[in-house]
Amino acid sequence: MRIKIHLAAALLMGGAASATVAQDASATLHTRALAATCANCHGTDGRTVEGSAIPSLVGMPKSYMIMQFNAFKDGSRPATVMHQLSKGFTDQQIDSIATYFAATKR
Amino acid sequence: MKRRNFVQASLALGTLGSMVGCATTGRIPNRAKVLVIGGGYGGATAAKYVRMLSNYKIDVVMAEPNTNFVSCPISNLVLGGSRTMGDITTPYDKLSGKHGVTVVKDMVSSIDAAKKTVTLASGATIGYDKLILSPGIDLMWNSIGGLQAANAAGQILQAWKAGPETLALRRQLEAMPDGGVYAITIPLAPYRCPPGPYERASQVASYFKKAKPKSKVLILDANPDVTSKGPLFKKFWAENYQGMLEYRGGHKAMAVDARTNTVKFDVQDDVKAQVLNVLPDMSAGAIAVRSGLANANKRWCDVNYLTFESTAAKDVHIIGDSTLSAPLMPKSGHMANSHGKVVAAAVVAQLSGMEVNPNPVLTNTCYSFVNDKLVVHVASVHQYVAAEKTFKSVPGSGGVSAAPNELEGVYAWNWAQNIWADTLL
Image (cartoon, rainbow over all chains, first blue to last red; front, top):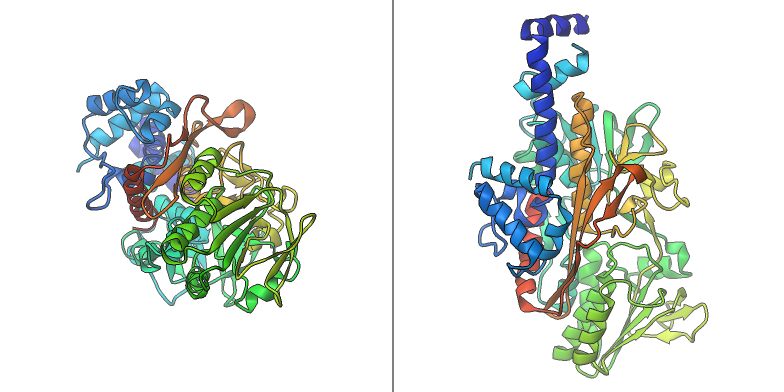
């Protein structure tokens, strides 16, 4: 019975549109989980605790974050740990992370 | 459109699911979509992130016997005297108040994976769709003769699970006369927090140097050599705790004699100390072992690393120190927090009919204080390798500090505050 109701709802929504929504929902979930790998040090959704010497990432412009990642990777920006952690992420992952934090409101 | 697609679309549109707006204290629900056992770095993070990543649509119940979270990381600084118990303690109220996790203050006595129910010590039963088990470690008292009784008597402490024993060990150090010996024994790896014992020895030496300069720190390690950040620790010890701190590798503790406060080894002579801090072998948390989930050598829990689902039981996901660690994966609070996020995303995906992330990533950073200000770290990034069905640390990434430094002392304390917030607030 429930399935029938769901089916009816799905028909109302339109199959094609909901499939796109579904894909987007998966992609969003994966990106949020990826960005959460930063949260251990940089706070949930990139918001650090007050007075933290570790910077917040929320709202950071995308191009700036990608530039910093690359600077950590090539050693042009000195670091304590980020020169080591940045090398563990692919360019595509860095792009996703930077896109996520840039789009997250401060 | 299949049913799962409907759920998925509904999740995205925000039209389905129960809103658990506020926590219920005192009332124990008889069902949970997601039931989390254990409110440590792994479990609390998983509980919070299932709520967040499902846009607060999947209800989460977390069973945890303690009222407050007490952090193992930084707890060595309580022994050294530069931090207090208050500094390392965080209540669970934000997890319920802010994130809508129903926190049930109780121990879990049994798991019925076939019926998908869990029975609490109080006798209540909770059914689940997904179980996330994060019970930490269990101390294998029987691995060292006489230890359990000596520990129960409050004489020979472990303080490896931060809490009352942390403070009790600090009191023992304070009460020890100058000229006394503090000895810590370390079990064979794997154990919780690889650099932890060496940080602890450093903290005690730092305290002795200021307060009891004629005293001695003895590290009696079952491993042949320092298991983490070895060159950094040893250089610092040689330059700062010369004549005070002594490291002895290959010393496997077999038994303790409480009457004489002596520890016995398989080969070497007995060692007597004024303060004995004995760490027995460790295994997955007792509830995991008891439930037949510790299927790797009857000691650790083997999991499918993509989802952290147990290889022994369907819909039971096991994270944190209890898992059979992937290559170069430490049993650490930071790593457990990382596990918590991967499992949360996987469980949310599965319950919503979405695709499980095929490329999860884990990070780890472990800071160790070699005195009250200077710190060294070890860091790593672990990517899931589908062909090998495990996480592997990325070649060329990660590493350790060049030398102990004060800047990382600041970052280490900030790391602690941020990860506590990420886990609990």
